[in-house]
Image 1 (spheres, rainbow, N blue to C red):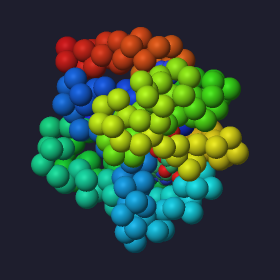
Image 2 (cartoon, helix red, strand yellow):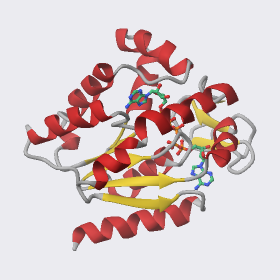
Image 3 (tube, rainbow, N blue to C red):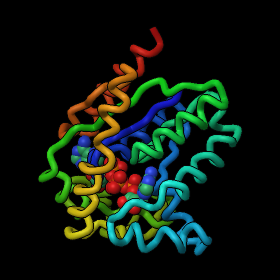
Image 4 (cartoon, protein in one colour):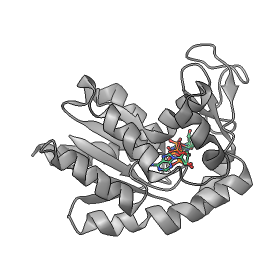
Length: 217
Ligand code: AP5
């Protein structure tokens, strides 16, 4: 099963992909996480990506396509994966088609997380992430038991450098201009399902599971 999660920043793609990974064991391939890992390890990709991410701009297509190309070669992706935050441009979508058709594989479903922009600024500016295990919190809606400490592993909770209001607005602008055309791109293939993503995490997850059940029949 190959799934694409498409939606604006903060719509819950990462939260839902992580839950699906936990419950169904499908690998979560987040280009954002891969790029942040590259930045923290100061690799060549990380050094190149940092200035784009900090400005809320997209990292060049060839850089992210290469990351995905290498990642889907790994054994754990042989029976499927969730693409969380990739593709984000028509050019990336075309490259993905090429990579998959070379393996005789097809995208099973594109899940679009729909939500108004106003809700997203609050979600993202309050997000905190554990720098050790990646667990996600929110300063008002999903607090840790001890402030700034991860409930799961005791790691330190930090704010992403691109989760400030000005950069969030830039990311939203880029989503609408460069990424949302992919909804039309994949609709033409008849593989798009939309989810109203402003509801609770569990309601969204329940919709997601219903969509996946329809793939099994
Ligand atoms: P990336 O890391 O992919 O960020 P994003 O797309 O901006 O998405 P987010 O991670 O911010 O949001 P999300 O939808 O996953 O929401 P989440 O579940 O975390 O990319 C970062 C940057 O990397 C990009 O700007 C770009 O520079 C670069 N990049 C990445 N991929 C690229 C590509 N393919 N091409 C080029 N550049 C690329 O939830 C957000 C918050 O909301 C959390 O606090 C969460 O707890 C909360 N929340 C989630 N669901 C709910 C709910 N239902 N109710 C209430 N709160 C909720």
